[in-house]
Image (cartoon, rainbow, N blue to C red):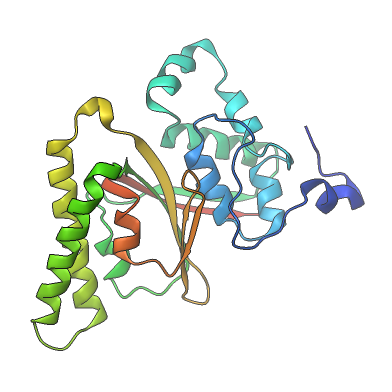
Length: 237
């Protein structure tokens, strides 16, 4: 494990906080961890979140649950929001971080709550959803196209009204998706929506190697469908 030792700290990490995506060096079902990791925009925050391991940032996290009682559940369902809460408590208890926010948003949270609220405050939201199946993307495009057509015929285009129509199209598609796709073909997935201090928004989807600046609802729906949970995330050193 690479630890942060004095002047070697940033050399060991070899981090470039830019538009590139950082993934696990092995395939270990850690889309949630790396979506959050990539949303952290300073080396210091990434050091804290990875417990000092710049080569394999998720190793300490996954090792916490490398026990018989967890293995079958993780193999079948992946890592959960409760796993992340326990890990953040660990980081706080060992002094890596001073405090954290890992707060569930309302049960029926959808993209409209982010894009249509008018809120401009910085926030990081981890979205739990299903990965959009490639065979269903044409159907999604048609629903979005129909929503856009309804916007263009409804008077002057206003961003909030447009986003609301697109968010509803995404929700309608989600309902359709869940009816058409078998349970065995559903793939739970985690990605992050981040609103920065500047008001700019970035979407981080590690599995698809995607960092999308100022994403639209259409961009997100191309990757995520049927949102079932969302968490607000924050670290303080």
